[in-house]
Length: 192
Image 1 (cartoon, helix red, strand yellow):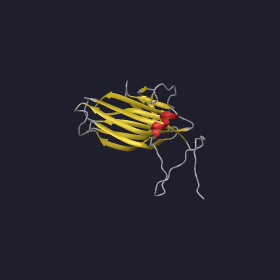
Image 2 (cartoon, rainbow, N blue to C red):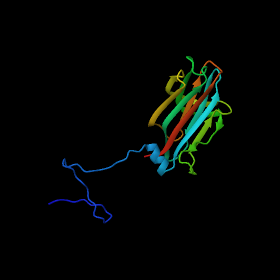
Image 3 (spheres, rainbow, N blue to C red):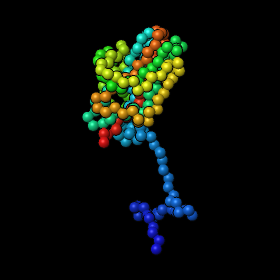
Image 4 (tube, rainbow, N blue to C red):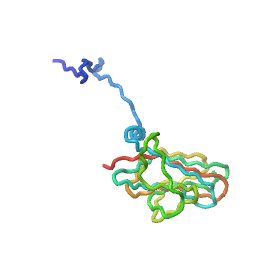
C-alpha cells in the first residue's frame, strides 16, 4: 500500500520522491541577525569615533540592562585612520566585565530594521566628548595590534552579555595623530 503525503491547501499537491528515495525540498539559510531584525526588530548597531591621544582611549561601552534578553554580539569592526594611528606600538583591547564609571557620551544604538520604533535595552556610551572611564575588574577577551587599519571580528553570536554585563573597546597607542573608530553589531535573544 502506497502512502501519499499531501499539502493542507486542498489542491492535491503531493511530495515528490526521486529514484534514490529522496524527497524533493527547497530550503533557505538565513543569518540569526537577519531573522531577529526581520521578525522581532531587535538587531542594532552602535559606533564611536575619537581623535587619538597618546594613551588608552576607551571608545565604546555596551551594558545589557534587559530583564529578559541576552545581548548577543554578532560583529565588531575596529578601524584606525591615519598612518600614525596604525603603528607598531598601538593596539586594540576588547574587555568584558567592569562597569561604566564616568565620561563618554550616552548614545542610542541604531535599530537595523529601519523604521522600527523599538530601542535597545541597555546603557551605551561612546567617546564623542571624552573618553569613557570604567570601574571594577575587566577581563581581556581579545587584544590585537593596530598595524592593520581595518580589523573585523565576526563573532556570529558567540559573545553573549547577560543582564548587567558590559563590553568595552579601547585603543592604546603612543601617538596623538589620527582617529580610532569602533562599531558593534548586536541583537537580543530571549534567555532560555
